[in-house]
View 1 (cartoon, helix red, strand yellow):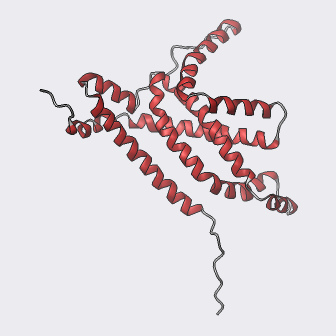
View 2 (view 1 turned 135 degrees about the vertical axis):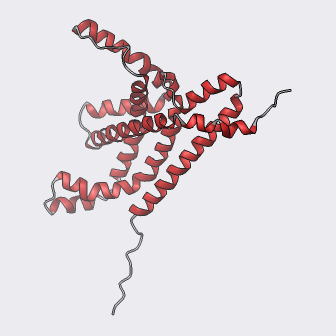
View 3 (view 1 turned 90 degrees about the vertical axis):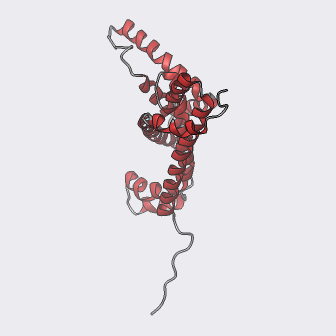
Length: 241
């Protein structure tokens, strides 16, 4: 009678799954970059209430936060090729639709989803900066860029770090759905491996261990960064000689 649970396989499968970890991390970092850059742009648009763009930004954030990421992945995977076909037909272009790697669709979908959440975090962090400090900086003759660099970013980054860190951890786990775009990362590799030996439970336990270790490492790194950039609650006492 075959074993109901093969504990040894849980650990022996990990090296095979780790071969695909670079794909998972690469997908995470690219989506993170897209999310931060686009999230900052959306946050600035909403804070400054730019006509038309502000309304579009609100609608974008609502849609991306209100629909499942797996649905967004499917829409991106099937929608972009359809859009390119229309462009090729109406504008006479010759984009190679079949030549686009699946990871590109996953990066776009995950990056756009990430930007919606990051924009709200960044917006709230920027708005938390004391307006009096902004007015003081402007009265000293600082340009808009100098105010952003010297006043807003240092304080807002402290406020936004933890929420953005939590969003990053959610993104790492969200990459497990990239298989919908034909991307073979560690979860997809686990499905393939389990399909060969029919040990689904053991392989998924292996995946759980890997994801837990990755998120634990990122949590430690974020805590170190938080301690490094945190603003002390009280100024150090000056000891008179």
